[in-house]
Length: 261
Image 1 (cartoon, rainbow, N blue to C red):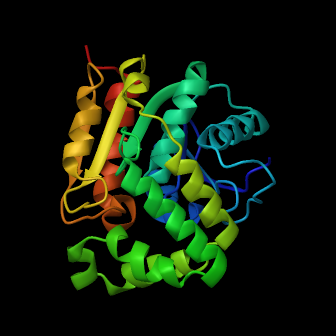
Image 2: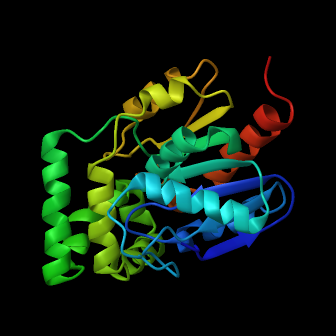
């Protein structure tokens, strides 16, 4: 599986994996804002954006292996790997399957716990609805929780951009990804086994993966760094890109270049 990627900058490779049901287009402000500090690589996960879906059974492990294959194609042995929401789930799968390729980890607006049964059932319901009726269920049920109240009240252009990305998500990819996420395991053991620096970022208004989930992930690692982004919801990198980029830049500068004692 060859992933379509957008990249910017040079130097330390930093892979950022997008949220559900968006694409690497969500990382525009990160490609622009972080390019002076690192080489930002933002792939479209399989089925989204410019990447095809294929015929494989739904699996986050497969998505993680796609990312490893992308690094091979780019000639990169090790990288900082991070993701937001679904991208965070794929990042944790990557850490399980390819730990020797990780220089550092960024987990944004995501959670390490597995889905409880009601959440798994809801994912399957949405998967079936999208396949039979199209993207309307995403606009009515998924979109409202992606954006925090401050963005809804004050950032109409941001909300409109996210809505457009949600509406353009291919139904087959949406259903496939929902089923892959529903089957994911608990990842706290994965985090506690990390041998590299971890940055956890969360929007203070995130209702899908609230700050308590972020705090639990940061505590799972001896020296985890936690950054809470004010006035941002689940898509903190899109809603408050300057604050998000500042947190990542500081992490790269202090934890990756001159690790804390």
